[in-house]
Structures are given as C-alpha cells and as structure tokens.
Image (tube, rainbow, N blue to C red; front, side, top):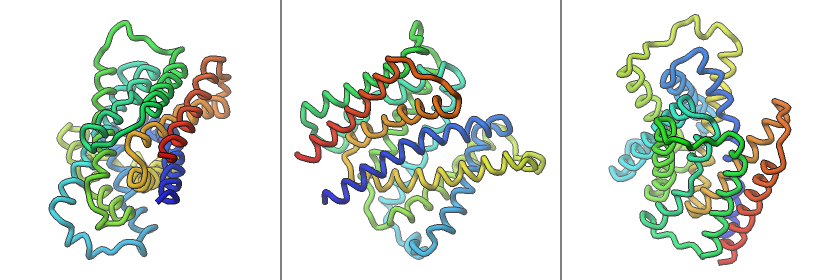
Length: 294
C-alpha cells in the first residue's frame, strides 16, 4: 500500500536524524566505558525501556512459539547490527571521521538487494542513488585522505557490510512478531551477545563509581531511548520500503550532521558542503518520486 510506503519513508527520514544524534551519546560515554561495555549497557537499558513502553503491544507468549527460521534470522540480524556498531566505532578511532563516514554510506545495499532480494531498480533510480553518494562525498571533501587504505578504513567498510546485511535480513523473517516485539527480542539477544563479547575481550565489569555522575547516567538513558527509536523505525521502514531506496534515504544523516555542526558547534558550512547537502536532498526526492510512480 502506498500509504504504508509513505509512512515507511517518513520513518527512515526520522531514522537518519536518529543516526546523526546517536554518535553524540557514544562519544560521551566513550570517556567512561570501554567499547562493548558501554554498548551492552545501552542495549540492556533499551531492552528494559522498550519492554516497559511497548508492554501493551507485546504478546510475551509469542516468543515461545516463534519458528526456528525466524529465530535464526533475528539472531543473525542482531549479531550483524551490533558487530556493525562496534566496527564503525573502531574505524572512527583509527582513521579520520571523513574517511569513515564516506565509506559507511557506499551504495553497497542496492547491489545486495539485487542479488539477495531480487529487487529491480529503474536506471534513473540508480543514477540518482549515485548522485546522492556524490553529495555525501562533497560533504566529506574537507577531511578526506585516501593516500592509503588502512586499518580504520577496512573496519568502516566491514561495518557497512554487517549493517546492510542486518537491514536486508528484515525482508527475510515473517511478520509473526510485530515491530515492537521484534525490537525487544533483538535488544535481549543483542545485550547478551555484547556482554559475552565484552567479557571475552577482557573489558571487565562496570563499577558503581562510573554511575555516580548524572551526566553519565543521562547519556546512558538517552542512548538507550534512541536505540529503542532506532530499531523500531528500522524494522518499520525496511518492512515497507525497498532496501536500496531505504539506504538512499538514510544518506540524509549527513545533512543532519551538517546541521548539528552549525547549530551546536558553530561550524559554518562552506559552499561545497551546502551543495552536497542540496544534492543529497534532491537525490532522495527524485529516487522516491520515481519509485513511487513505478
């Protein structure tokens, strides 16, 4: 239904803003917690918050009657998603932000959608998707440095593969669980997976003193809430919009990041950054216009 698709597009546009915002929490918490430590704390808290907020929309008995196929796919999606989170963070720590950001939006998902889902796109759509990537490249131009492709760039690229696999896999599992039930299930599996990984890497356990600061507590709470919003919007958006089109919509994240730089950090964008933002918005508009009329 077109109305559902329109809602899916709106959900993905909001999701792009959520993506642009979540990095703020991760960076702040990185001063107090290890990588997987802060991630499992945020996701574990997201599990509790999601369970409470969506309690009336969740039929807890359904978790005991999920098909094996759905369980496998949901576990696969969860592992891919949070490996992607860890790897992009590792990439950002080992290369400059512009390199990692540009690699993170390479238009790999349309290829995955073609080979794994059989999605077909019109030539005009493909052209506008590439046009949007050019816009992101303009936004990253000032900090780009590809004299060598190193460890950080590799981590960013591998994270992109895992993220895209997690999004693509949304098309594979059934709708037996609604989007709220799916999100809570993935939070539960994800927090356990991240906790186990943290212990295996020797990160240790958080101490009480780490939670004495109100700013740290609020950052954890904010990160958890945004993770809840993130996963619910992801499940809904990729349910109703072609994966390749959805990935194009998510490039708006770069425009939101530009806005944050201007309003929070007084970073005045230069001409080619403004041009890049306009190109991204035009790309998203025309891709959706073409696909909606198809």
